[in-house]
Structures are given as C-alpha cells and as structure tokens.
Length: 337
Image (cartoon, rainbow, N blue to C red; front, side):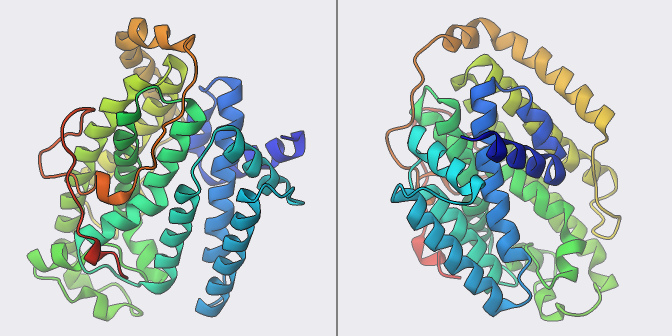
C-alpha cells in the first residue's frame, strides 16, 4: 500500500477514534498498517451514509459503496488510495467479502430504522456494524484459533452496546433510538419511539437510565466473552486489543458513575486515563506472556470459515463464550428491519 494511503488512514483514525488510535500504536508495524486501513474504510463507509442530507441520499451512498465493494473484490485497481489499500488488505489477509457486506447492511439498517423493536434485532445490528470489524481484525492479526472468532464478534458487540449507551441523547437529536422497545417496555417506557422528532421527554429520563444499566450489564457479558479470545492472538496484538477493550469498558463505568442518566452529557476517558488503562493492559498481558510470546514466532493463519450472526448471537444471560462447546442459535425471522 502507498504512503499516501497510510497517511490518510492514520489521519482518519486519529481524528475519529483516539481510543483505537492509541491501541493501534501497540500493534506490530505490519498489523498496525493493515488495521488502520480497515478502520479507514469502515469510517469512510459510515461517513458516506451518515453525512447524506436525506434518506434518498443515504440510499444512493449505499449503492455507491456496494459498487465499490464489487470492484474491491473483483481485484480492480482503485483510484481512491483508501479503497486501493483496502483492496490489497482484503486480498493479502483473505478477508471474506461477507464481513464488509454485512457492515454495509448494518449501515442500511441505520437508514431504514429509527428504532429497534427488540434486543435480538439490536444485537443483529451490533454484529453487522461492529462484530464484523472484529472478524476482519481476526484476519489482519492472524488469529491462531478459529473458534476465537466468536469471542472477537462478542468484543465488537460489547463496544457497540457501550457506544449506544453513551450516545442516547445525541442519537435522539438525530431522530434515532437504539434502546430496544422490549427493554423499554419492561420499564414502562415501551412507546418512547413515538416521541422521536421532539425534545427528549423528561419523564422518560429515569426509565431510560434503567434500560441503559441493563444494556451495560449485557455489554459486560460480551466483554467477558471477548476476553476469552485474546490469548489466541500474539502478545503485541493481544495487548492492543486488551487496551481498546479496557478503554471502552471504562466509558461504561463512567456512564454508571453518573447514574446512567441519558442527559448527563457524553462520557469519555481522558488521555491520562487511557494511558493508565494501557499500563494496566500491559500488566494483565504479562500474565499471558509465556503463552502468547510463543505464538509471536508462529506461522500466521487466517480463519477458514466465515462466521455469521446466527452462529454467535445471542449470548445467553450469564454465559461467557469460550472456545469450546455448542453455540446458541439465532431466529433469522427477526432479521428483517
């Protein structure tokens, strides 16, 4: 890939995600370059849809993105440096087309859906926009145990659930509600989506806080499952992923510290806090160092089978996914938006 593509990709991740930018610096050079290119493509796709002025514009952007993906997987040289770099990474790392396709389907859900009826549908969305990123990173980082791809999906889902809990007020202002109706209904707020388009209703503040707390608990279950897959990475890659995981989980802790209040403002972690968490990740990684350092010189592998949402979701209450045992099933009838 060209130096221009890398410079653009690094700038994109530095501007849009300081947490991932920090974690990426802990990766070996080759994996770091590939990871920032994958992130840049994902960000490019998200921005193309998100910045559209209206639904027809967003639909046109999705059509363009799908056509570009056709060209990427046809092996055509691309004029756009980020697209060309992404084409090279998908080819070199053998990233299945299913994963970027599913990510685009997740962006389509953002266009078509203003709210989610139930938790399974929300988890499908999280798989598409975040779990698939974890799966692409499995190929970028040379995951050695194919079963750990399930854990990678769960870590992505956990991070996306954290994002959703952090951004309730911002999403409301954009006419979107990701908190699912079934959980809202358990707290007597199931018709909240009917008030989209107006100011956030103050009577809903406390019930929504309880729903946010529920979702953060669910995110914790997915984080624990994600942790179980980290030893399948090399030491440096595992350290980077552990750092990103700790920073995102810390956002959830800050949300809880403020009572999960949706109107308390955006929760964030300071630069000093991120560095402290990175230090803790180093300490935690040291426990796995003998096991993971042995992997550092091993031949890089890529998972052989595609991982689909129905293979890895939902994670049952109280369950932590390991690399053994049967996997729960998914009701595909819930897939339609």
